[in-house]
Image (cartoon, rainbow, N blue to C red; front, side, top):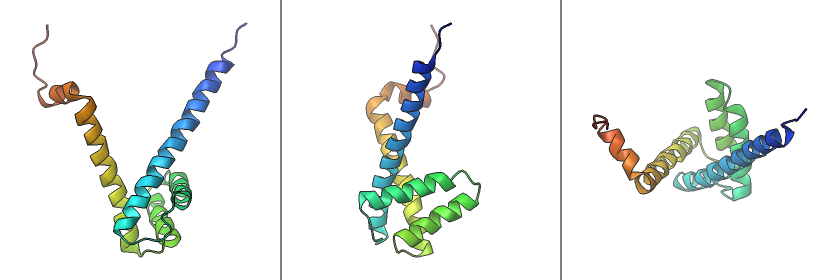
Length: 121
């Protein structure tokens, strides 16, 4: 009987690696966004911990958003408006980066999305 444990271990490692990379990207974007709202503690370590806390509470509907804003507000010394603005700026920057990647790496895909009525061979 052959087991698939090495394969399962590889998937778990990949999931953990992707989670850490996602947290690093979020932490960098949060540091950039905090610069727009004059937030304090913009170092990577501090924003990484904030990103981790936000990732943990974001699974709770509605309350997760409020807790995310609260963590940004208290950990980076901004008001409620600054916390919400920083949170929104993170998503705006992420969308702009994603669109830039799509435009640079997948022009054929973008052409297909803009003209779905192409003839099929």
